[in-house]
Figure (cartoon, rainbow, N blue to C red):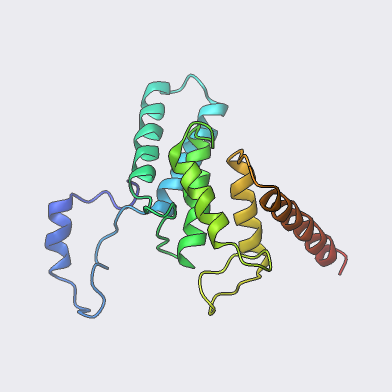
Amino acid sequence: MFGDESNYVDALRLELLNPAEPFGDIVIDYPYLECTSAAIQALTSFKKLYPGHRREEIQSCISKAVKFIENIQKPDGSWYGSWAVCFTYATWFGMKALVAGGKTFKNSSSVRKACEFLLKKQLASGGWGESYLSCQDKVMRKFKSALNLKMAEFEVEMEHKRKALDEDVNILMYRVNEKSLK
């Protein structure tokens, strides 16, 4: 939804002028999850600061952007990330957008699917990695995944998952404190 403002037909014509044949689809910008998520979060914050300013237009924009985020979600509950480590990273942006748009575990199947995706991808170590080549135990990835689940008001039904999530938060707090003492 948010990206370059080019007309789609004009954009296709511009792509024909791409001098770098191996790098397709680089001449114009496309709608991105990351940009749309940031726009939803910014508009939600703006709406809180200035509740009377163009209220209907802003809410309409947020609603359309949230619908875009829901529509591009993968069947497994993840999103495709365009600018970094793919699916776990992108789920952070998808969840931030949905929560900013008023979605929760209780009222959104997209949020529930994203939570399930994260829980299925959690490693025995408590980290989240997408392959054996990923940086499986990086603090930020663990933080983002754990925060996504908390942020969505995730109702963990199985005790071992709740325990794992609580352990992740404790590990994060320890690592943050450990780094701040150095």
